[in-house]
Length: 358
Image (cartoon, rainbow, N blue to C red; front, top):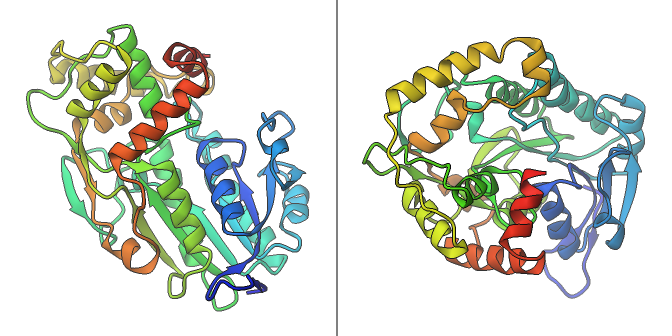
């Protein structure tokens, strides 16, 4: 890899990196982690993206789009490492939109990177790539877990397809690696699972779907995910592999939501709802949202995917990532403290919810 040693810091080196999704949540933290590591950072952003924060940082802006091969060639020129964080993660979208963004966009970017002589490609995948329709609780699974035969939704299916492309592209002169951070959370997140659930609790509209049993989940604080991505840009022996990335310890979902409600003066989810009717509603909604006018322009009120995130236990064995990449540095309580400080900084929980709902 074309790299420059950092004077006086044994074993450290800097590279020129390209970050996609840099105007978004995780991508912004990858940018920060790269800058802290001394890397020279270029970001690929769309013309319509909010780049106000990026303009305050020592980064090079390249305007383009994953659908535009010319802009991708321009973005990849002279780059050593690509951190590919951009993806379609919204609840709405047609199959073609998901394929174009998550699969074809990744293929185009990898092709541009390889042709430009990029030496390493770090892909931000997701454990959702392994979520099947008929899955139940899955505790402590590792990277030997196979892909399901039937995926839970188009996001899961297209992330799996993109991950397979990335892993298969690995070769001696082009190292590719996929990371699967689970349920990323933390400062700067306005649209992920945590702000959406907090917004529902602020209005008392989030019911308790636990059915009286604990639901365990691995989460991944944003800085832990970003640190893993930077480490993956440097580590040896990671090519052609996928890694689960998560915080040091899993959490119990419903008690965590109750703690979140108490912290921000929201209404904890205590109203029990029978799961069977809700599952039937989620199935009906998923079928209805296959209609193009709905799929393209509106998010479903409930889906089997969103229901699974709140009712299925899902924890991951991250020993491979700890061995080959890095141990997560931020634990859950420290992350919550940092999240609270950021919410205060942007004007308090009401402003946070307002932005999350805009």
